[in-house]
Image 1: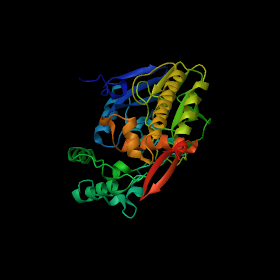
Image 2: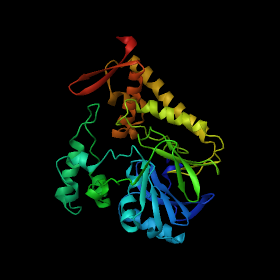
Image 3: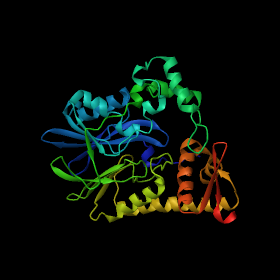
Image 4: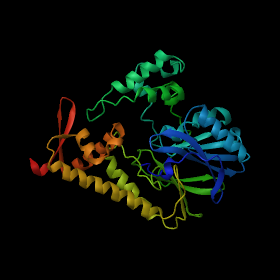
Length: 358
């Protein structure tokens, strides 16, 4: 039986539509787990246009962006500012190419980073020297990525050969894919930004990533929610973060959404615009609270459980893998910070036990 697609999984529409006062939406295609498009928003002013989240790196996304802009009467050279909501490929991928074409500013939160920066992945290798057409160079990147252990001790899961070949064709293992844009404008929480003839308030919302940025237009009641609050799926909360307890930060940021009065529409990075932002944020909190309860119950019967073992209690088998383990790790560490679990290390593997069973 085929399950109906969530909004965020739907294929990208080729139409450019006005989704709020003075805001156009262009959907760009992506082919990532659980996602079929990214919403790139366009705002016009006397200087040209600002775009928010210009999609993946690579020619396919660039061609789609160019065509969408053309249908709206613009071209990449008209872009004076790129806003990147957070440091994931499908949001920042087109930023540097836009800057090369139009000398646009790139605006991010001051914490902006790329967790998959090629300099971190390759260490002693200069990623700029990688030939994207070199099988040998791409294979080195693949081996480097998947030879590393995750922070909780698990080995990274090697994707199926078919998937690796698809990634190679997309250029996912060459230097351009890993190239992190360098922000020219960095903002802090509650800072005012003047764009598209209006004032926007920067809203720092760590959780999905530590550098996640939402934008709030109090005059028109518009909130760009990025990946922080999505309409029908729960954003991934990863355990690989500079934060000691990323889930606690996520909860704090989700509750923050209930403080904004007068939100008439939320514009997410995936899926359709929605209303009642605060209620949706609390639904996401409830989802994660239920997962914490599942871990609490599991820990009573699983002394010294590994992240992988807890993951299998939290997720259906079709979702097992690195992302599920990372989210499980975030929940385990949250309970450890609360004093409900104890962590031990054995041969590089993290194990968790309920404190009341010791």
